[in-house]
Length: 366
Ligand code: NAD
Image 1: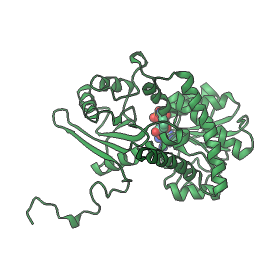
Image 2: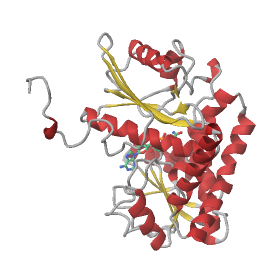
Image 3: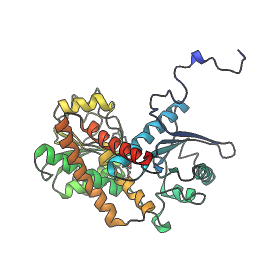
Image 4: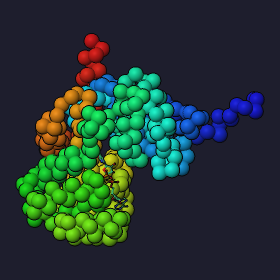
């Protein structure tokens, strides 16, 4: 064997198709540009329902494997989010390896935009962690295949208020199923993470008379919002055993895990964070066994994608609101299906989404 050939027995998995998050993805594009220092990966999971739309995340990944796994996992999630929401979109996502605070600049964004453009619309980008509306405006200079641009440039603007409204709808549907009423007046609600989405959610539930407890790592933010909405504050990580009716994870993923699940006192889990269940199958089943109504994250946080989809379809605010309000009906359907078929709500939502994709694929192959 020559020196420049890697000993394959040293590798644990096949480099791409053997990754733990690989799930029949259609295409994975590695983007490299020496002049700007761009290193990015675009993951296209599925385009049966339409072009793969999903945001670009810029993050300082520990290794390139972490970046690859992240883009694989996130792009798959987008497929099911759009499918369950009834949008004619596939699932895609992109990651740029680097520090958004120090390494992001307009040349890098333009170069990334050229890679997006080279896919001729099969992948359409948008904002995610580390990105801002302004970055999308820069990408728009070199490709039309970008959403989430400024309202002044014809875009739909900040998606967070719509995302929060969809989460609120999903939470009300879960309350209807669990408590027999969707009225949140007097309900104790813990909102973990009061950033862009969390704050608007706090506003909606406070307006309805809920007793809100907020938690965040940013203490200044807690102080500000506590004054603004009269919410109670809880500091630190020890929040899962709090005596509340509803837990709304709006910070990070995987907060429902082996350590936290047995502490939960809430009877409903409904929040904005992506990938709330550390293990979709195991923790989904445990929540069901504990009688906790879990509103699937990828269903109830779809307001943001409904908002950017408007840019492609040309519909306005009324239609965005109508589609987002429909999250209420879909969430109730999912609870009923989960009960009827004795499956988790995550599985029920996933099955409906997969069914939609399979049906469309059959029609296309006729
Ligand atoms: P954000 O960054 O504005 O807010 C997140 C908040 O969580 C911040 O205030 C942060 O301080 C806090 N936080 C971080 N770690 C924490 C921890 N360990 N404990 C408590 N608080 C913590 O983000 P956002 O746009 O409000 O999004 C919130 C979540 O919803 C994210 O998981 C995001 O992926 C998801 N999401 C957002 C949108 C959207 O439209 N913004 C759409 C879909 C999903």
